[in-house]
Amino acid sequence: MQKTIESIQKQTFTNFEVWIIDGNSSDETQHYLQKLKPPFQFLTEKDSGIYEAMNKGISLAKGEWLFFLGSGDCLHSGTILDEVSKNFNSTIQLFYGNVCYENSFFNSKFSSILWLKNALHHQSVFYHKSLFENQKYDTDFKILGDYDLNLKLFRSKIISKKEEITIAFCNEHGVSKKINWDLYKEELKIKTQQTSIILFPVFFLFVFLKFVYKNIFYKT
Image (tube, rainbow, N blue to C red; front, side, top):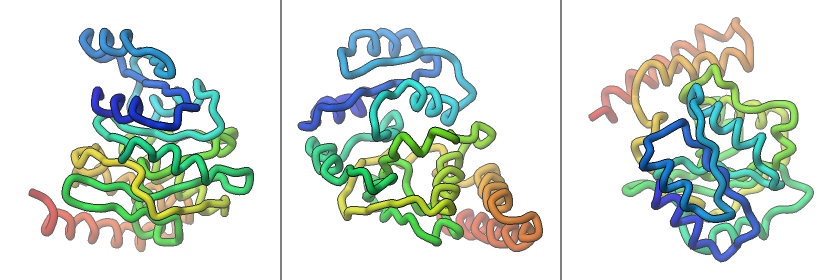
């Protein structure tokens, strides 16, 4: 968490607040959080998982634009918020760029490719807060709640903009990077819920083949 916070402290753009949602972690972590000064604020209490924590952050946030950065992830440079903020205006509801890992690059896309895969990396996206007025993250999902939301937003034809900039440097060991059937069950549920149960066999075959492929070629 410390390197995540340090990457925020280095920003040349300073007109923001930071809410750290801590799921009642260790005394050492809480002691560290208590020493932080504004714009950092924190809430410490138990939650049911990532998406309940993020929903709490949404409710507490006072800003016009929201960005979610996981513990261990970092903003890519000290000027990235300055670069991003120049794109904010009243005509767009979602702004995004790309992210990188230690050994790879993720080119985010907000397009029909979302029907095939989770193509919009969560740490590459800035959401206008109005998008959460009538919905938040579905806490029934423990791994792909962000994919569920992004697909809903794409279906609703919101106005988005992309710049070819790298927003964040991300941890390669996040929960969505683990190749297990729970991940693919959630993908199957999302695709089926947002279309029709009639398409379940098609989606099941597609998702199952992806699961088998990843286990053969990517699992270590």
